[in-house]
Image (cartoon, rainbow, N blue to C red; front, side, top):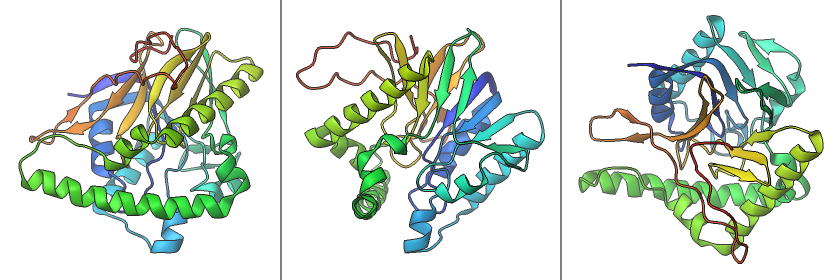
Length: 277
């Protein structure tokens, strides 16, 4: 049965790669319909396709067709290009297939809160100032993702249910990666505060969360490589973070994501992950 929400926010799908979990995103879109659909960057991975060739599965093709169909009918679809699909930034201000291409977007939720939508790569110093290092890191990440595919196959062969991400586990355990995430979040929040909005919704770092930062809501959509997460807005303006996992039946299983631990050595109040404020 399809549930209706006001808006769906997704980012970092990385279409065109083997790592893209298009089948899980299709489960989400089959389970949820919406008035708005926001594609918050890195939807297509032109970086990977240029270096490693194009991998385009039937599920990825179906996913694109489904998004285009929604745009043609009742859904307002906005695409905000990221660094992996930055070629689309040359077409900011135009539309294709009823999908708006914008550099950023100001979304007013049902409760009146205003959210700034952006991908976020401009707040990543490595991507912005050291592109060669970003490309090197992307290669290393691709290796981890390939290992993750093998690990998932092994888990299924052994009858172990659920999904577990090696890349996500590594990021959660490496202190430098944790510090990078928090530095990124702080930069994005500072920018949003300067813009005078109530919250910010972004992607880029593949670290899904909803939390309050001194009265400003920070929301990250996560990705469809490791975490398979999205944010939805309900009719009352409440924001919820969903993780889509595949059980043995293959059905989509929306779950509330637990709040991430505070930055090391810095105390932070507990946050209810299901709500933005």
